[in-house]
Length: 331
Image 1 (tube, rainbow, N blue to C red):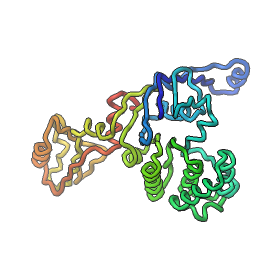
Image 2 (cartoon, one colour):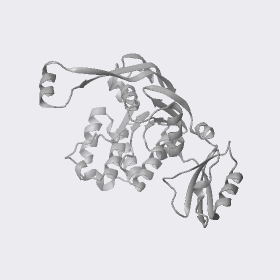
Image 3 (tube, one colour):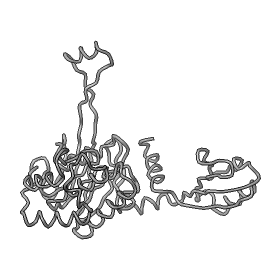
Image 4 (tube, rainbow, N blue to C red):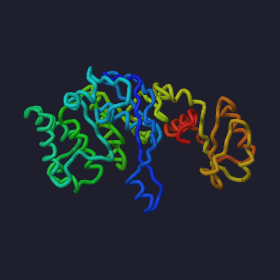
């Protein structure tokens, strides 16, 4: 369904030094810096997949999404989606995709949301019966109700994002591109959005490409991740496989009394987290390939009286940070 081969994209960025004199000079002679946003990006995504596309700021995620959406044209390479080249057949391609940018709105600011929906109905040339059926379904699933009669500028961020999802899905797209869809949302709104995306994929087989820095979104929604850094694809595999690679790392949280010298526990494979520890509580990072959990607990108990201890694996955020360090990006 989605196939990218050797995609490259370079941007020319104007730069100048501060000051009025430099601003005047820039009017007559501009200096540019070339930034390689994408370097030989290649991957394939099948129909009905939900894929997390992750990487640090400036890695090339949004540029890739814009190329797949038909907004940008690459310098070289091939991109074929549903048998079409997005930037060459933009109208037909737009009819089969939905895009949600967490920091950009497709709703008209000063008019009721329903007016924006009806304008989108005309833009996409949706049949009246299909439009009504989709609107009723989305209103029920997303709990829009009275929001439809409210101007977009009067909605909270969570309410607006629910309306943004509906706007992107009125024409029943086969592919949904999500760029930071839950940014700024409260916990309740995030859970509602995640439930909705899962239901959409399960019931309609919608292909979802999710770009986000919220690793809980990735963990809740996707089974496959593609890691990009410096414009290059660094890793493409399952989330379970990623966790398996880092399964040796554990976090030991110890509550103790007496023997305050837990900082004296220094052994290969066991590291005290200074930032998370405090008197009476210590947090250690343990590499079980170097030191078993039982040995670590024994060493700590020699230094203090343990009142409570918990052992947990890496969180998804910690796993991804470890991955960034492994590839030397964003650190």
